Image (tube, rainbow, N blue to C red; front, side, top):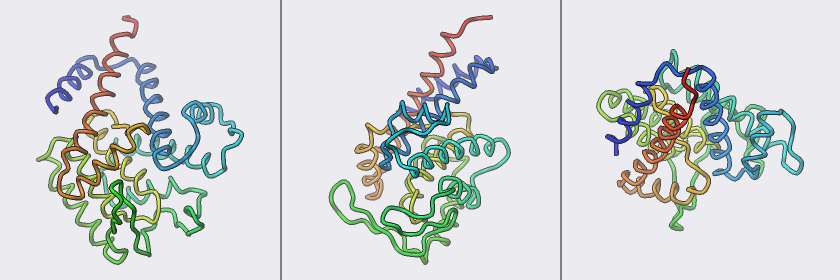
Amino acid sequence: MFTKIDSLKKIVEAKRPLHPELMATIAQKFREEWTYNSNAIEGNTMTLQETLFFLREGLTVQGRTLREHLEMINHAEAVDYLQDAIKHRDLTEGLIKEFHAILFSGIKTMAGGVPVVPGAYKTKNNHVLTASGKIHHYTPASQVPAEMEKLLKWYKDNKGKLHAVELAALFHHRFVAIHPFPDGNGRVGRLCMNFILMKNAYPPAIIRKENRKEYYISLEEADHGNPQLFINLVADEVIRNLQLMVDEIERAPKN
């Protein structure tokens, strides 16, 4: 699995420097599909076509809420922020809070009217009903700062030991297992995962809406100490986007 990923990555690297217009087109495709799918997984009802229209034209879509539009534009801006940050920063607790603050710019409540402070950890405990029908309790609010500190230490300790894809997948799982924010943990977790991948010159792993059930089931398996299913899911999406890059590079006119 990792052998195939690194073989495709070598093909892309051998073609560098890529034409700036082609790089921009590929980056735009990833930004738009990532934004659409990450929000759709969380219940945003805008279609891919509506998302593309809104992000490209800046015009609102009839029948969609203000919150849904804010979620799309905020996520796209978070991706832009991430792409700039990977040039000169590493993943830190501060950067994670910055991602959350961007995602919730102009959004002050979660579903049901519960307040959300952009960039601030939860103050109340939270839980979820899992894919298997069990109630799963996340890290208590009082323990979040300590657990996040442990997570970032784990990341630093394993950067040079684990393959970047495995490191990114495991970080995402460990982050959502803590669930440090009152809302937006999935989207922040996927931003962190892709920060790690892109920092290591891999494309983002875009978890698609149609794989939502598989995504949650594999995360639940990881909760039980079996992360391989989730690692495989992330690896498959990295392969998908590396192959897309190879195909686009080979299709591009030769100068």
